[in-house]
Amino acid sequence: MGPSVLIAGAGPSGLVLALILLQNGVSVRIINNELKHRIGSRGAGIQARTLELYEILGIFPDIRKAGEPVKSEGKPFSMAVYNPGKTEPTKLLPSNYVAPTPDTPHTYGLTLSQERHEEILREYLKDLSCTVELGCELRDFEQFTDHVVAHLVKTDADGQQQEERTKFDWLVGTDGAHSMVRKQLGLSFLGETRTEQNMALGDIVIENLDNKIWHTWNVPPKLIMLRANHSTSQVFTYVYTGRAGEKPLTREEFIEEFYALTGRRDLTFGENTWMSNYRPNVRMVDRMRDGRVFIAGDAAHCHTPSGAQGLNSSIQDAVNLGWKLAIVAKGLAPEALLDTYSEERIRVIAHMLQVTTKMHDKTWVHVPGAPADDESRWKRSPDLSMLGVNYCGSSIVLEGKDKGKAAAESNAYATAEGGRVQAAYRAPDAPGLVSVDDAQMTNLFSVFRATVHTVLVFGGDAAGRALVADVLGRLPKDTVQRWSSFATVLEDRAGHAYGGYGVEAGELTVVVVRPDGVIGAVVFEAEGVEAYFQRIFG
Ligand SMILES: Cc1cc2nc3c(=O)[nH]c(=O)nc-3n(C[C@H](O)[C@H](O)[C@H](O)COP(=O)(O)OP(=O)(O)OC[C@H]3O[C@@H](n4cnc5c(N)ncnc54)[C@H](O)[C@@H]3O)c2cc1C
Ligand SMILES: *[C@@H]1O[C@H](CO)[C@@H](O)[C@H](O)[C@H]1NC(C)=O
Ligand SMILES: *[C@@H]1O[C@H](CO)[C@@H](O)[C@H](O)[C@H]1NC(C)=O
Image 1 (cartoon, rainbow, N blue to C red):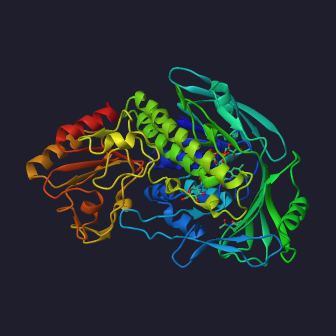
Image 2: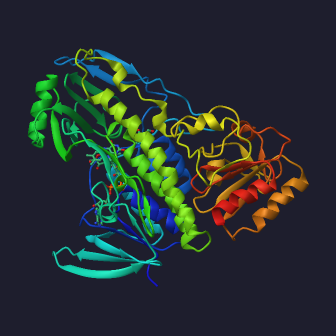
Image 3: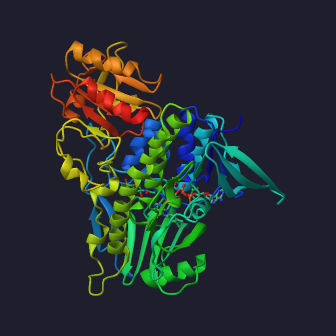
């Protein structure tokens, strides 16, 4: 039997989806139409929430090692703002660094070129015996009640082509903004292309510019921003906007425009490894599933580059779909569970597009009369960390008592209110837990897995806890891990779990954490636990 899932497109969403399915023991084939892996910085920002998901996937340490924190304690300033012709900045914008807390170990994202990021993801796939098949294009597909037939065309290095028609159980189009899967499904892709705004992005070497800070020149309506791709690298990623004309810029034209705009002829440019002329697009579909076929990532939504939400939200699509598709593909849950992928993600994406479009306009679109050194344009809403992304109102999420629920439902991107954790929000971390068995210190993010639900049982008496254990015992094998009251199995010595989860000692509180790190249920008796899992496994 061949692989169960065909993943068409090996960008970040396809790679992360493949990793989750493989970790879950579901076989995949992942293809990419191009003959070589793509290069360049592109989506170079990895949001704080994505880092948390990477902890759950077990790949965070390698990503952290390769990337550069967006803000760190030792860097008081985040951006230097220059007037044309001056080598000293007119203003240094403070970074307003916020320190991590026990429940939020990542207060900022990382920058990491998409090229390197994808390479790391491919290394993890390789460990699971999966390689991306290059030069393999999905041309079209046909859908049947219990399978999908994909029409693939393979091109080898000599340009020889070979066609095949192969059967899969499921097809996921992670094939980017021009997605053929979306087009063949006939899904609407509504929104706008900002034709008035040509942007040029690229990676270029500048040997004599400070690589520890971001740099910007604003000469309305033109704006240039430079950011080193790592604090040890002189490769700068540039974003240039506001020029007139349709023609893509070359390296030499960019440099001429740069000198004309900034007057900084003291800066000397080296190799330009990657360059892209880009027109912001803001579009999304209204549905991400059609029978046995799904779309995820840019295939389903595209963004302006501001605030770097494109890649993060693509990865969140993959994480939301991954665990659901895994248990359905293994026959453990009904197909209807897959409808909740679209249901949960569409609302979040719609909200995100509003936020990023507003921010894009604030940063890159010149308002006549606005001061050239207006620093408010660089202020970023804390929403962009994506830590507040929530699935309130989802049909599979269960909140036993509706504490603060109504307020949250109105905003898919809200930061959770203080107090007890709520269903539909991210499950916070809690360090300082001590395993009673082996006295090892651990934290919740190390305990969570992309392959199982994690059930945290706080407080209660032995009888109440036994009833919960009973419910869990009847669930499909290996789909749930239980961390019985922290008082007995994991001892919450520092109080971060009780504190961070806002749970009072005494009362039985069961927090069910989904494989995507989202709280699926907060309930107070065994019946609630049963009701939640009924929604998942049927
Ligand atoms: C110039 C530029 C700058 C960007 N800057 C940022 C940024 O600063 N921050 C940010 O967050 N995001 C940014 N993005 C967006 C970010 O790159 C995307 O959001 C992200 O790559 C989406 O990942 P994906 O996996 O959904 O799609 P993609 O990365 O587009 O991957 C799709 C893959 O599918 C392949 N493919 C297409 N059709 C087929 C087919 N029929 N068969 C097989 N394979 C196929 C493609 O070759 C491609 O490799 C930028 C994008 C561009 C182009
Ligand atoms: C993801 O979010 C981080 C903020 O934490 C941001 O810096 C980064 O650019 C985002 N990246 C993408 C590709 O969305
Ligand atoms: C910086 O850019 C270079 C050239 O594009 C690339 O090879 C390298 O991996 C990048 N480094 C990081 C940390 O993004």
